[in-house]
Amino acid sequence: MTFTRTPIYQGHVVDLGLETVELPAHEPFQLEIVRHPGGAAAVAVNAQGQVCLIRQYRHAAGGWIWEIPAGKIDPNEPPRHTAERELQEEVGLLAQQWTDLGSMFSTPGFCSEILYLYLAQDLTQVAHQREPNELIETHWVDFQQALDWARQDEIRDAKSVAALFRAAAVLS
Image 1: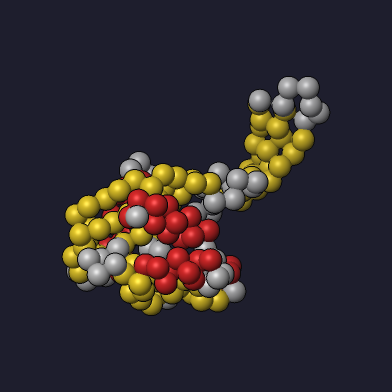
Image 2: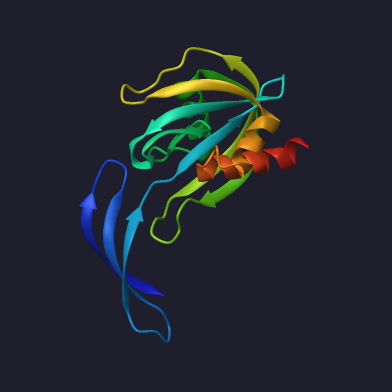
């Protein structure tokens, strides 16, 4: 497979381009592709079996949604460091125990973003350091209730659904 890329837009988070793809035994075709640096997310579970969920305003989603703490990977930043940083910045938590839950593509049909998922345990509360444009509420929810919310379409964020069920498999 080979491809060429024509840039369309370069922003702070995404790089949109028109890519002409050539596959063996196929005619060349064009795809609009978003290149993204990736992200990392943490399922933070406390000693009482509660998970830290955030309710965050997401303009692209049309309002408030339930998520786990997560964020964009900075240049040359290891994914786990991103998860640690975002957990502290968004909800003011440090974790002593980290379990790798694997990775996932968010929307592979048009975006290169890979999300790295982690289980964070043995938690300590510290001050959060949210960015000025983040509208976030922090909630502690029984882990089983969070899984029910994911099944019932209350939690619709893909990374959060995947991470919760992967964490459930580790915790059971």
